Length: 437
Ligand SMILES: *Cc1c(COP(=O)(O)O)cnc(C)c1O
Image 1 (tube, rainbow, N blue to C red):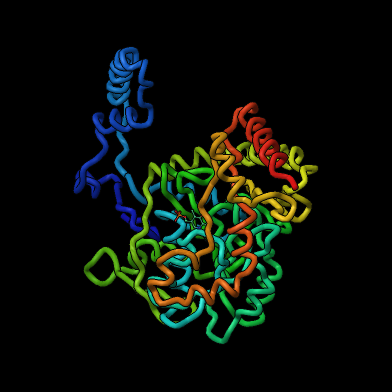
Image 2: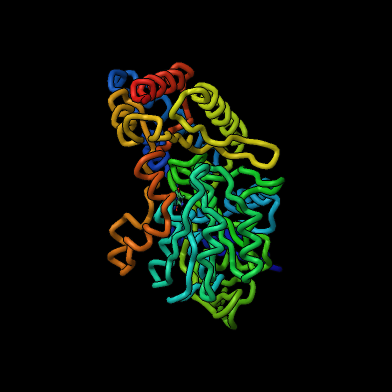
């Protein structure tokens, strides 16, 4: 019998009397009930009713199991493969792998880019630390570019100023789902033969000049952590590329496991990988089937989710546009479609008595949530602890420092009742009017 070869670590669960999958524990009734109860816990005042209902559900599920084959394949099976196919179609790109998180995707991309200790990576001053975790971990030098205060995205002019002979990777981050100025960044990268890795953690479904964000640079990674627009049960990431090296993604995901060309007398080989430069040893970043099921399900409503968020952002812009002291963020146009992951709220402190810090205090008093994810990276202890001269870096990022101290916060855009969105707008307008000079 000719065995079907797959490029991944997918045990053959075929027609054998004793299948491969017989070596591990499977999902059983008890697990399903525990997962169900975790996902659908009782309301405090409804515990009694909940118990009776759960009993009924238990009975039904038991009956259901009698007519079913319980899931046998829990990782890197059909669902992961299906998800990767759907993502490729959605993004119109050649290669995609589903991973534990976006940070794992960055790591794989950095390794393909042959990033080594002493090489330089240019990342924006304002992002989440995960963007640069891998370079920091291996002792590559992170150079922080200043941001464009209109979007908080990387300022290509500052990137151009900071490129050196040692620059190996540029990492544009599409903050809040609003696309970076990719054509300017790609021009710089081409000129100096630098790899571009898009941190598209917020930007699954964003569009820039007709191209899907994440597919414009050499690599792009998306996050499906629980705080993003859609999630694969709390954690998850997808790395994509149009470069031929994407063929190696399945091996890069799982320790270099190579089932296509096994060594003699064995099922598989293990290979190192390379693209630009030297071989590297891949890690293990596999995500699970059930995570893929969840993400496939959420992908079906992604359009609606983005649409809802877009409308909320438009509403806020409309409410804020004539308020002295508020700077509204750019929204979609012919060139750009954001995922509206976060609403970039900014004030002009020159027109107010006080700045964003004061506004944030007053927002907190009114119960308005802000999203404090993105302080300038040079402010975190890790940079100093790893030997960076953070004071000096700060001086090279005046816009990042100014917006952080005095101008911006992020607001949520989802999932709101209309009246809550209105409450947020009303309260903020009230606060700003009280503070106007
Ligand atoms: C969430 C986030 C990440 C990390 O994503 P994970 O999937 O949690 O690894 C990276 N960059 C930015 C800008 C993020 O917000």
